[in-house]
Structures are given as structure tokens and as C-alpha cells.
Length: 149
Ligand code: FES
Image (cartoon, rainbow, N blue to C red):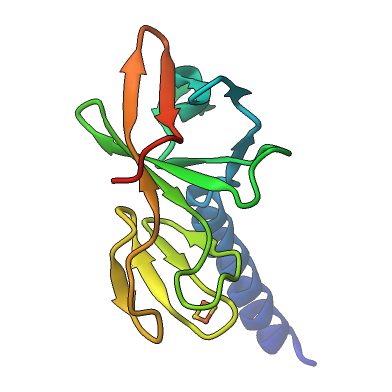
């Protein structure tokens, strides 16, 4: 490899690394919490939806509640303006556990997709996901497991 080729290759690699790090920086890892199981539901602290980024507090798009007493996790989305949705991560097609990708939930089994309200975006699933009412009480979020919305 001559000097000119080496410089070109090195610069391309450095540019790619810089680009990748800026992409990865925007992809924060999912936040998991167990929440606190109550008689009628589960509570999670609202502070679970915030994180520090470059010295500033930013809001997480979603938090995943994974508790031993729950057969499937619940993805709680922060929709803005104090509004939240809680979606059971169980595919309505054949019951596989869903994966979260931003504002979508996708099924690794057969490819169904759902939005952050549990509505079908992609078949083969033919029913929306199970969702639960969510209410903010003081500094806690209460997910009512008695009802579905
Ligand atoms: S179980 Fe999810 S698409 Fe079939």
C-alpha cells in the first residue's frame, strides 16, 4: 500500500468511526425497571423517564417494565404533554415476546409490527396489542392492570 492509498483509507475509516459514534450516541440503551407491584397494578417512578446526556436532562421515549410477576414485559411510552401508553409486549398473533425499536414494537417470530399505542402496522397479526390505562400520580406512574384499554 502506498502513502496516498494509506491516507485515503485511514481518513475514510476515521470518518466512518465518527459517523458511527454520532449514530450510536443517539441510540440510548433501553431503560428497564421492575416497578413496584401493587394490589391493582404497578407503579414506576416518573424519574425513570429521564437521563443525563452531556450534562442535560433528556426524556426517554419509553421504559420497559419487566417484573417477575408479569408473564410479559410492558413497554411504557412517554407520548409527550404528560401522556403515556402502556403496551403488553406479547404479540397478538401467536404470543411471542415483542422487541422495541423506537416508537414501534416488532415481532421476531413472523414480522408483525405495532405502533406505540399497540395498533397493528404490519400483519400477520390481526388484533391490536393489549394495553393498560396509565395515570400520573405525584411523582409516580400507575399502570392499572385490572383493565385494558
Ligand atoms: S407471533 Fe408475532 S407475528 Fe406471529
